Length: 492
Image (cartoon, rainbow, N blue to C red; front, side, top):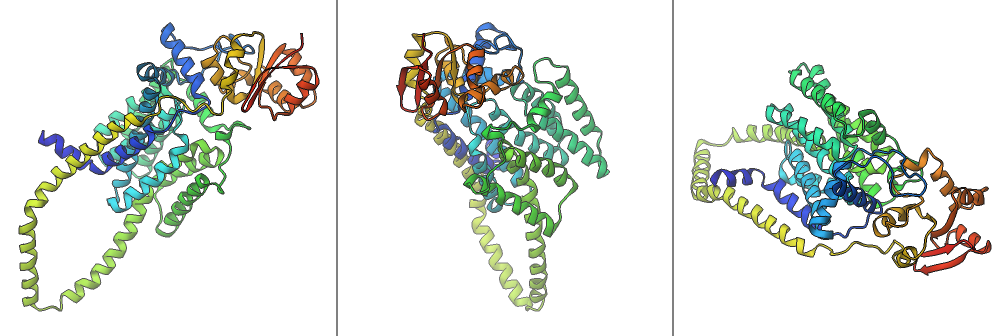
């Protein structure tokens, strides 16, 4: 029991920080447009006890192979839903956010005192909030800082941390394609060890073994495809567009970039810092979904640079004080020593009890975090989806042209009506469906041919779309209409 309390005391700040993150994350409603088709995919795999590798949800890409390398992440998401409905989804989200918060706080505290580390970690977690969405990407949000902390611990001499890094990445590879960042991180630390003339054998073995195990495993997206998925940005997808620094999210990102550049230019950085942060900054600048990962990566290096700068300033100040102290009399010195000993004696009891108090505080914070599950929303936020069209869709048939962002919702809530397009994206690029969709909804030249080619009989779109008026002009009738949507039907 005493050893457990001592462990809690040593990790009091990271554990308390993660409890706070859990409490915040669990109270948010599920709202991501991609969550729905991830849930549907996980449900199919659980029911069929097989991986889903072809399209079964659309009318335009049925049977076409596709793999996003996140089958286990989808299964985990659905199992959370099956276990606790939307509260289960919220608990899974909050748990992964808490894991990320714990790892970020640990890496920040590696070099900096809590007064510096906790604010830095807090800013990094705030920067990650836009990506607290209920889909497999959350596993990358959690496991990237975990692996970075393991690598930093291994660099400081922990063999157990290096051994643990291998299974972390192997499991990660089935959860989300972001595992490519994990393999890259292991190789970066291996190269750094070689360049710094430190023992590199363990790093090389860990990196090579992880690469082999992932490549030989049939479940994940191939390493080349995963790297391409991480590095590529798809035009027109908000999360893969460059960040706007005029938004609060973008401004905070700019603050991190500016602070890192200033710290490294003024105080100097390390080779490892450059190896990690330069590619992460490039990814963050190319697609905003990577911005939180840059924030996580910069925290330990920034905290180290700032702490060294503070130590240097304190050392110079201390030298001046030491010269002044040397001129004091022996009597004053003895009086001061007596006062210090007296204070130490009186505070000895409280000093011994402080670790126990910290442990109790951590336990109390996590009891509060678990209690906050009662505040988790019982239903998702569906205000941006065509909820009112569901009955009309179920009572009709034919090829349905739907909004891209609504595809996942329809897959989950109206499975009997295959979608035209949805957030899975990749099945629809090669066969021209995505191009046809863009042509139709924007009423570009050839839009009627695009609709006729796919034999569209109904269109579920936003009423302010140019296509909505164009179809009305062509004689399409309104089958259902409501707040933010209209369901139009081709004349018979």
